[in-house]
Amino acid sequence: MAEILGINIDNLNRAEALQRIGNFLADGRQHWIATINPEIAVKAYKDKKYCDILNKADLRVADGVGIIWISRFLGGGLKERIAGVDLIYDIFGDLKKNAGFKAMIIGAEKDSREKAKENLKKLFSHIEFGISLLNIKFSRGNNGEIEKNNKENEEMLAGLNGEIRKFAPDILFVAFGAPRQEQWICDNLPLLPSVKLAIGVGGAIDMISGKTPRASKIIRGIGTEWLWRFFLEPRRLGRILNAVVVFPYLAIRYGLKK
Ligand code: UDP
Image (tube, protein in one colour):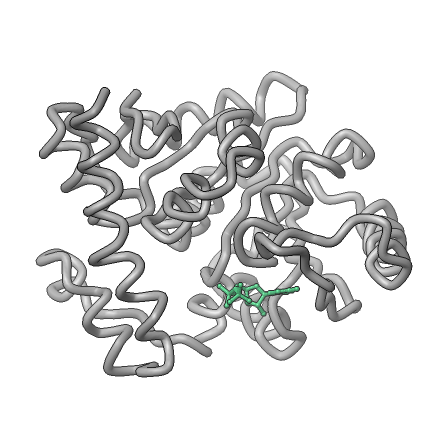
């Protein structure tokens, strides 16, 4: 475990994470996974409630090279970056072919959900894939969270849970962006008994659908995916600066004070 800005991140490589997930799926209980990137860590630093939610996950993986670098700088040495999108492919690749697993995608835009489902079906024909038909755009509170006591949000949430109960997936991919996806999982997982594993996947569905092109292995390997994202979407500059400037500054200051 390494603590980064108050979040306890599990120190596992990809194979170890996969083994842990295999155990989750075998024990019959409900589990959920948070994929922690620098942007999420900064949000959690500013919002204690969100930080507490993240620390309730059964597994927190380091989804960002910045998290790995800072953990090494602070002497905590996380082993490997585990990108949410890689984790999705790994999980399906690892699932037993005869077990009849069902997986469902909720969140993201409709075209992205549909395309991601199509692409996953081609690769993993042993899994039954479903998507929610509802498009979910939450009214948000001050920290970007799903606003409570909001009638439209409550109606959307009830409709969505109805769809999930009907399809009854074992695995649920939740792409509402942070902090909504983790908040949603915490509040709703106990209400959805078929779901044995839920994962907050942020923009990973948009990557699987091809809506957001992924950086090449070389660019990812040298830790410059953020620069690639900037060239693709310059409007994300604020978010990118948050990840590459604000995050290291806050995380090092926090780590050195401890
Ligand atoms: N998203 C969603 N519902 C929302 C907000 C976001 O389904 O109320 C989806 C969005 O379409 C995208 C994913 O969440 O596929 C991640 O969104 P992003 O990282 O852009 O988060 P945001 O900037 O909206 O906070």
